[in-house]
Image (cartoon, rainbow, N blue to C red; front, side, top):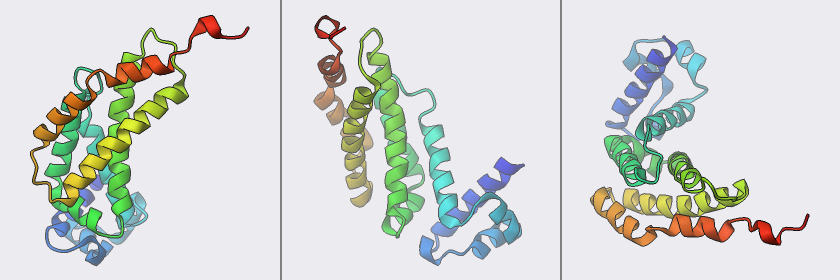
Length: 191
């Protein structure tokens, strides 16, 4: 029942965002639309921004389900674009409000989860420190999110597939090259 209530609150918030900006929506608006009382809202979330964060995390989980390998990263990234497009009024409203950081964190989480899966797969059989894998994932994460934030800021008009196709050409083989550069050379280690 808890997930059902959370999803109902999320859907209500998304309906409200079609009518007015997030800073004009109240918890009473959401609970009235859902047909629940305010205490039920507070049982699940501390405020509207907590609901936004939960919604972003849920969307992220669904978007990347099974798409975290080297062969599927483009599809995973396309799924991220699609999740943003599916929630366009929600994302644009949150992005344009005081909670822009939540959209950025949502995108950082999504892309990091996608990239670390790809990096771990490509690092099999290589001796690479976890901190170096994280560094590589973060480097690409910031590049990917930067592209997505520009896309959101420009009204999501460009075709995501074209962006991914151009990105694929740019980074083809780069993750493996990066891992090789951070590979621990056992012949030069001190005992």
